[in-house]
Image (cartoon, rainbow, N blue to C red; front, side, top):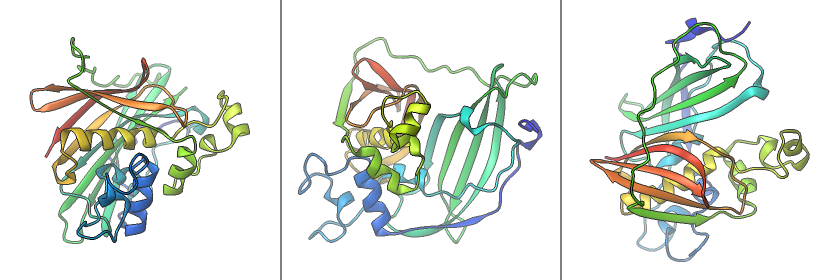
Length: 279
């Protein structure tokens, strides 16, 4: 059976989520924290026992914590699936360790003609029911469109007609994907040269969510003065693959109370239509 548009609105079972201090440290290293100044900058994210420094978690860590499984929205060939969009909203600061309850939802399904865009939403709360965070992932599935459904809203994001107000960049490590995969995504596309070759790449590529995490790290330090409590929401679209070792530069424009952004490798846009808001 193909994708099932009637699945929109259905929810999966609630599941418990837990993460430890070690999980948060590993995620921080996976998105490059501490690489340029391991004994100074970012110690609150890369260590748990530094004098006078309390451990903190990067807000983008929520994308690897799960809680949205058990959803059935039809059958498709996973070889034609691309992670097209990702957004997160923090309702309160993510602690360095904790437990929570999450549930997933098929939020929308759009007919793009030759493909479908499936929007999956995960809502996570603490044990008292207080919202902690919300994530939304857009899955672009080739060959699954054409049923005559809604094409979805048009994007009104536009690149500002001026140089970026701020640019923050980080070099990724050549082994960045090998480190990031320890957060849970063991897809061999990011580690096995023979598998990457089948997919059309000369070498394994970086996880899209690692690019997302490095981007969020730049926004945190630049827009939020490194304070995770000020990190509100972040979203945009994956545009182009990144190779481990490439430098990611996040171009930011302040527009009203939002920060618009693009992540680039040189002149190549790799994450587009970015919108960030402080708490």
